[in-house]
Image (tube, rainbow, N blue to C red; front, side, top):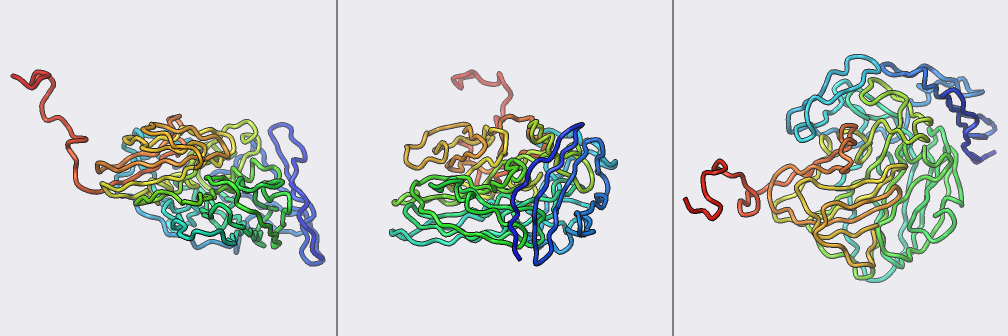
Amino acid sequence: MACGLVDQKQIWKSDHRVSYRSTKVCKGDKQMTRQKNHDANSPEAGADEAPQQAQGQGLSRRNLLVGSAGATLGSMVGASAAVAQSDQSGAGSHMRPTASLGNRIYSANPTHPGMTDISENPANVPPPITRTEPATVRIQLETIEIEAHLDTNSRFRFWTFNGTVPGPFQRVRVGDTVEVYLKNNEDSWFAHNVDFHAVTGPGGGASLGAPGPGESYSFKFKALNPGLYVYHCAVAPVALHIANGMYGLILVEPEEGLTSVDREFYVMQGEIYTEEPFGSVGVLTESYDKLIDERAEYLVFNGHVGALTDHYPLQAKVGETVRIYFGVGGPNYTSAFHVIGEIFDKAYLHGSLVTPPLESVQTIVVPPGGSGIVEFKCEVPGRFVLVDHALSRAERGLAGYLIVEGEENPDIFSSLDEAPGAASPDGQE
């Protein structure tokens, strides 16, 4: 007997309490209903979550986590600069930054140095397509729910494609036939599927299935339009699945391909809504109330706080041209994407590859479910900070680094050795 997970629906909501349920999850002859409750008045910061029974099964949330797939990802990368951070000794404490953004770097989780890291390495971009004819391309996705590093001393149960946030970068060519095979890991609690914005068809592929734990579905589509597109889970409540990490990008290259650059990077912005305040300690719980009120506790590049500062900073050399594929998973906030100390030589707004790019652009605006492509030449060495220029969001984790190494270029950028007034404007004494 095999029953699909029919839907996830908000059952009731009152007094800051939300219940959402997955119905009719069947394995063999057993049928169970998994239900999860959140109470904003009962935070669980600072300790493992209290056991919560899955109806009819006698399983706690903690037991359901054991054996979760995808637990071996890239090891954490140590920081190369000093760490400035405040004390987080108390459960539920709210972290206040002790240093400005320019001097601050987020640290790896010291309490759990081996904690799973779900952040996608921004350098994980497939190479440009060299073939000149359409082909059949196969995309294989596995939806995995996994407890992993969120911030210093905190963890979170992420919902992912292939164990990373964002999910893997997909690259096809216009005219390709794309076959999508999605499996929902057997240790999942909920149904999942995928909606590709590059699809011409109902639901972007999501209307064709919503496999429960251990189940699969597949579909195919023709890539008709070149551009950079978001993909995400589309099982209700859709915003919750996205907020918990289920988003990624797919690039549909035009027939002539893209111009050659030295390095390509993959960066996505997202929001995380937790019952506990930013900076809390322990296993944090998602908050549906805060989600629908659009009150994110964490804002992140590539999955978690520190992903692109401490773990996977972007790396380039002086003289190289870099291209950043940028997207916003959301589900709610629009981004003003900016690299402090750089100007985008080219900016492909909305991920469009059929309209000419803008030139000499300081910031691009990308809405939830949207994307953009930027290119620039690295003229001088240094540490350049990636931000959403709604800069207060950096204090909740939204920052990344581009580390450029190489020779100084004083003709473009250097300090002044003389104090103001030491020489006249025309250089005459």
